[in-house]
Image 1 (cartoon, rainbow, N blue to C red):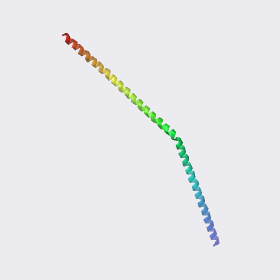
Image 2: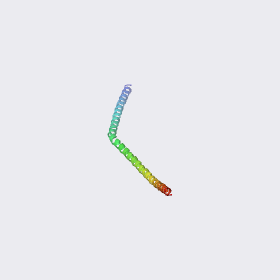
Image 3: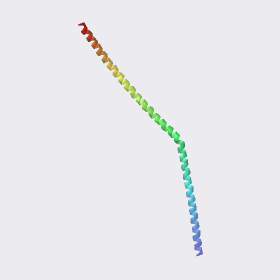
Image 4: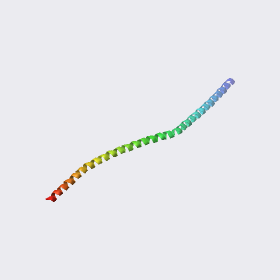
Length: 109
């Protein structure tokens, strides 16, 4: 019975050593994961200005494209309005000359 008791105590001691080792391994893994998470956070924080600058640059590009498109549309509309004004100016001048000539003809009669 002493042998059985000694074997049980040895097994218990081995099991206790295994638990201690597993706990130590677990603690090392947790610390390693925590350290890796901190490094990832630091890398992310270091990239924030770069990300912000890229966002600002893209926003400025989109704004410049929008302004250029609006200017192009404005110029097209302005050209259309000038063409329309020129066309109406000719009609108005013709009507004025016609009225002037008819008024002159009527005054001569």
